[in-house]
Length: 280
Image 1 (cartoon, helix red, strand yellow):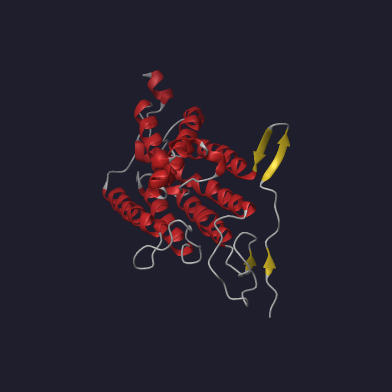
Image 2: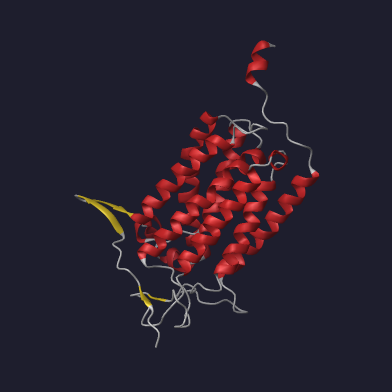
């Protein structure tokens, strides 16, 4: 038999500070959001201007709430509604895990809509710049999943050079699907989004980048689901599909619809120039 890799026994806790513990998973959220806001500050200033850097900073609190509340409630509603209906206090136990990307995406969309309305911004133009930064957080989150030894993949042939045995998944060699997702949903999608965002002709079509992200994520996640073991409490759905693939269908449809709408809409000229307005 060919040797397979054994999962490194990472400590899911990065640092112990007395009663306080800092976990890799929590750190991935914090670093992902901070890096995302830093990138957003640069992107909103590119012509046509979608917002000010100060407004990008202000969006930090909004996106944090959107990710956390949406991700948690999405997991509760999409994956284990029966359990949480009988154990409602468990909903707040986020330190035990249980976050849904699709729920988090809905939370961020709501946060984008409310923030854009309150600040009188073009919702789609601002969403375009924000979605470019999202894959950064996705990549970090999937790496944290790997460190935690969770969300492992399906059984892999022992001849696969990177087949891995996870301690909580039995002696069967499996796909390290967390790393597949980090590379596709994270790195690859970011490169595509960033390259597209560099073109002013694309930025002038509000909604195109947001649609590209939704469609790109849906394709990447659906592909990775073929290597990822479904949650034990859910398993496969009728037809052999997974819940992750089902939830990606409306994302793909919405993404394509947004790109078509963007191509048919008038060119976006950006925010008014505050210097010219002051002179007038």
